[in-house]
Image (cartoon, rainbow, N blue to C red):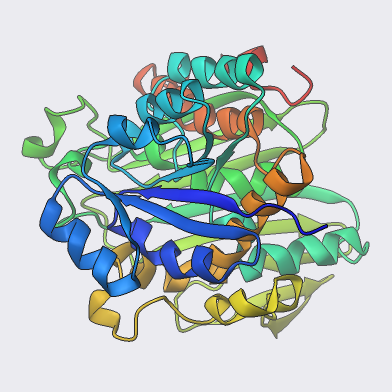
Length: 372
């Protein structure tokens, strides 16, 4: 018997609009509703993608009994509150990164999932990028050997982005470099130590009280001999955009290209060779496979800046949609589920606290561990 399609509502139509046609073409989803505070923007997107059900009020959307799941793409400060409200209204939740801005918000989300039995998935792009899927395949096939060390880096200039980004502590938006170093070995972070370096413009500091241009964090992985290092910058640091991870194994190691035009390197012993991550569209339903190589718009000028700067997020968007919808239809936990999402997010939150305390060692709370 065919499974019921999941009625999905997308909240926030900047970055969120990138996902509308992917849900429309996924065989297990029904792109049911969209939500945007500005009516003109709501109607512009609704008309462009032929979505009939439209809301300008998130609370009114949650009252709609026909909505099964919400995909939240609102500003960072709204993620936790909207996710909690949706869970308490009986809706499954997919939410763009990070899941929250405080450890307490992360705790509340874990508890809400436990209490409701509903599904939460943080839509972390990097762990569904073609580069990550490539390295994960090499690891699972034994080609890397024993993992020895992992490193992630996300450097980006956020000047010109919406005002709430100005002065944001670098590690408060660190999931793109934290997620791969925890996900590949499938381990939780146990504790962190982080140092800040440099100083951003004085007019950027007041909003969040964070002075650092760069924050660099060491992570000890739980129940493992592994550690990892992640680096994050947002302002006043000259660097081409780069979301990257490096993986060092006993047999082979993978290093991300230094520039967007460069090549990734696969080391066998001391012998380096250029390598390219293949596309993994064949893991997806046929109708959404094209989205691993293209955006949802015909013209680059219409695509969201994060999609352009991130080189299409490694083809991850259709994989994210497929994982979320499949998990709901199969009655299983998605990846990352609420606990792993909390662990990834809390690494960044606690890393900034550590940086403000001159590198103090801070443990991750037990509620973020996969086994509880």
